[in-house]
Amino acid sequence: MKKTLVIAIIAFLVVPFWMANAQDNIWYTTVLKEKFVDKSGNPLTGKSVIVGDVDSGVDIFSPFFFFADGGEYDWIDTDKDGGFTPGVDAVDFNKNGKADEGEWLNFIGMKNSTYGILKFNSKEYKSDMDFLYLDRNKDGKRNFGEKDGFAESDPTYGEQIFISLDKNRDNKLSAGEKLVALKTSKVRAVREKDGTIRRRGVDLIKTEPDTVKHGTSVSGIVLGGHYGVQKMCGIAPDAELVMANINYNYTPRFVTMFPDLVKFLRDEKVNVLLFEDGEWMYEYMDGSTEEEELTNQMARDGITVIGGGGNLASGNMHIKDNLKKGVPADYTFKAPKEAEKKKNDGVFTSFLWREKDVKVGFTVETPDGKKSNELTDGSGFVKVGDYNMFYSRDVSDKGTVMFRFGLSAKDSGTIDGSWKITAKSPKDIVIDGFIVDVTQSWGGSSHWTCKDKITDEGTVTFPSTADSLIAVGAYTVNFAFGPDDKLGGLCYYSGRGYNINGKIGIDISAPGHSTFTVAPDNSYTLFSGTSSAAPHVTGTVALMLQYDPTLTHAQIRNILKHTATTDEFTGSVPNTNWGWGKLNPEAAIKYVLK
Image (cartoon, rainbow, N blue to C red; front, side, top):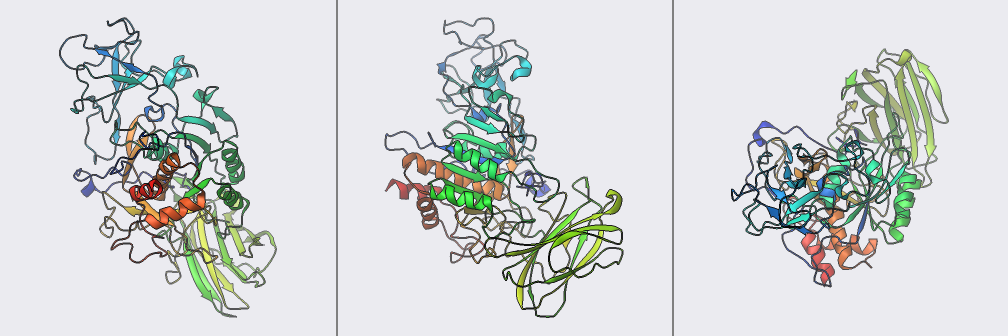
């Protein structure tokens, strides 16, 4: 879910103070350790590969998302001081050999949103971190977008952006070094939350902003930046992007537009489809939904489909129990009055089991001590004390039973307090229970308190439960989040276990915590979660497809598994924590090159 996709598909985590002053041994996880070329001898950069992302959106004005296809230019040391002076020196834009009015050269100092982990000065131009621009009106800031009078036809949708080719590798703009103009957006199209489609060359400049910031950071990992220039360049910086923006409902199912988003990306002829969302409430988790079937069909049609396995583990939001015939079992949970700065006026639970003919009876006890009648079938709304309750029993096309509840207080009040749901089955069964509230948080704002039933097993989330999807777990790099985390170890929140239909939930794991990428408003950021891990796999797949566009989803899935790394953390594979091991981009590409 998303907790707004943000924090949810995870997000920008508060860094412990003991991490804040370290920068030694930073691993920029999107930069491959070896260089590879395609069959024509060109660098593998994802060129001609189209990536579709189901996400929060993308910052189309970010310098990271324009191709360096605007041509080479000289710069002019106007003040003849031997170095670059922003706002004084010029770019020879009209190529007449002199600095003319409107050719002032300035730079975009990228902001540091890494909690001080990365050390750089945004007030000093660095060629491997920052971008130059043509400051036509000499106002010291980059103007862009329709608000500043620019149109779809304008390169970089504003005052034109440049990168510098740091020939002497001093990370500065030195005499004689060339500038390369950015021009064309890497974003082919965006489907906005209301269904409006924006297209490059037509009206992409009008695209709604990525207010959640999540999709921008994901896109940065996959295809941001420019090959050999930025130290945080994406894995496949010459790939193109089609973004399908998610609109969340207030109550579950929180996302009901997935079929439309998947069909849009299919029609846009994407080569790779990335799901950057994880849901668990009112989901069967068995691969039976329309969305999952569409995903399977896309995979059969040759489109590689990837998704983060979710960050549900360790949130106390999943229980599993062996329910014995005729023996009542109590499942307790607690709901806060407020969470994530939001009034908590709704809590939702769902119970799943595989025996479709077994009718389990449920009784709900509210915080004020009132009990409902036993509910075994059908659906409806009932009042229990000061609370309203929706319930429904449904069966999926694959035979999974779901009994779901929606709980709210009268007069739109809060639903805080301790609750108890009692279940009794006429037959021995295994039952799974999930919980969430209106915050849609991974963090367990409302959470189970029956500690002997809480488990991290079975926490891979929808739609990564689709049979054909490559589900990605996350492991820790660079900095551990707490004393129990280990560098190289599985992230504590990474979804794991078997799916309800008995399939190993995770295919492969990738760097997830803590990685670095770009965020809206010209900043670099810390980014974590399976939301970070999945785009590492996506970028790798884009490179594989550049070399061999005929590769099928099944072939790519098998190559990723076959070339995955194992170590003391993964142990023997496959297993339900790591899948087939850790992503090894170089080994996967070498396998394709053979």
